[in-house]
Length: 131
Image 1 (spheres, rainbow, N blue to C red):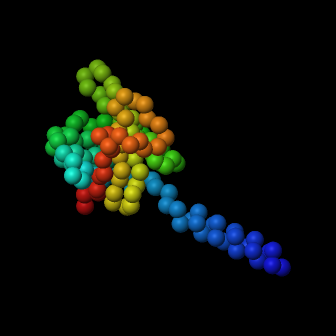
Image 2: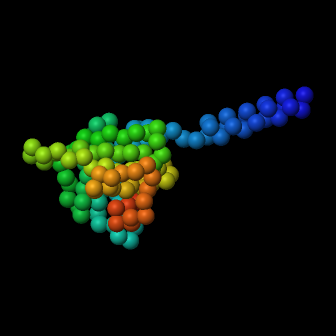
């Protein structure tokens, strides 16, 4: 009897932990995210819909880009396809929700993105959702 109660209790605890972990989706990402912090240079990402993002650097908006993100991974790989004339470049990055209104974003300009954030502070920023 005790073993059955322990097994049921363990199942309930494990199920509760799994249910409380938030699975993020595209709806959580849509909107404008602005760079914050001491080194913020008026940069932002605005996820318009399921396929379009607009990046701003130093207050200047770049052309809309297509993007893909893998919500099943933590941190989430984010690829932005930037087209300029007949040239296409994929900007590889990682994003992770810190909370509902804060994202950590790290860009890998050389395309050498791993599966986790690195210590390279120059390529990592914090973004806050603009409401």
